[in-house]
Amino acid sequence: MMKLMSVFLSIIMVLTVVGCGSTNSTNTSANDSTNNSATNENASKGETTSSDYPNQQIKMIIPYGPGGATDIIFRLIASHAERNLGQTIVPVNVEGASSTNGSRQVKDAAPNGYTILASHDVIATAYFAGVVDYSFEAFEPVAMLTQTPNIPTVHKDTGWKNMSDFVNYIKENPGEVKWSMTPGSTDHFFIAQLMKAAGLDLDSLKLIGYQGTGEQINALLAQQINGAMTNYTSGKAYFDNEFVALGVAHDERLAEADQIPTLIEQGINMTNATSRGIFAPKGTPEEIIIKIEEAFRKAMEDPEVQSKIKELGSIPRFKPHNEYKQFVSDLQTELGELAKNMEF
Image 1: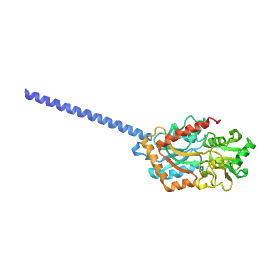
Image 2: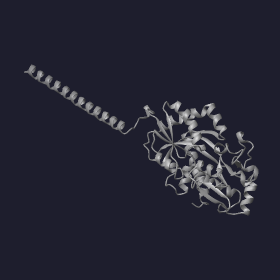
Image 3: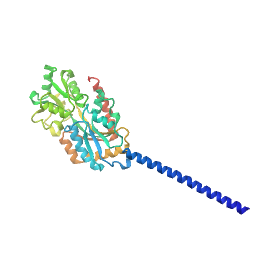
Image 4: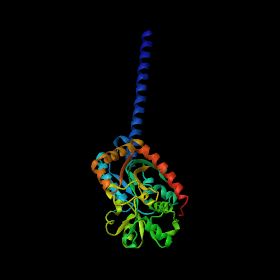
């Protein structure tokens, strides 16, 4: 009887062990199936994980047409940054709507690091102008790269050679000077700040709207307008012949253009620079943000890149994502104050 009971208990134990093993096997199989399904689903959506990023080319949206300072500078830096990422960075010009056609594409893109925005202060100026309902908070700042001091520029046939000539003419002929700008863009805010610093009313100018720097340069060459905001990058090819740089909005003269006096030297207490950087869609994982940031950091440390940026009249000024986030927050506050005195 005892032997029979012992055999019976042994059978029960075996069945129990087999049953437990069968249950674990079923759960493992189910988990593997779920994980494989999730992986396949993510792959079909074009998603990626931080560990294998980047495994395909990256689209860099430049919200302006080709040929302007923003386009030239970002293409230069990206061509070096892509070497550090191991994937091609493809610059794509998406101009229009005060640069918001391009920024909206990035804002609405998947936050996976494969669509990034190469832009600047216009993200906030377009918001304050009422062009869009979003500003810097709609993106993840990745890195600030450069600052470009801006230059009030006129056609040589105006006869104006400095800021005194410009200011005096406006005082004597209010409403006659045609000045170009992209509504709601950085150059719109620039001329508002310049007129205020010069003690003039913005209504003393006739503002003419254009889509971007390239259009404004062409309009100034054709004398459809009298002046525009340029910088050394976009204007240097014309400063010796067609254009006159009235002054540089910086606290010191540019090394590459030391013949151009600062506005401060001429009694206009004003500095103004376009701060360019990289942004990603909101929600992009920080691990991916850091990988992009590091690629651009290494590009900015390249002596060749630094030299070319300076030749273009810009200043290499790298800020990592955390510092850049604070910078654009402070910038938004400053631009908001200026916008209170502007009409859009």
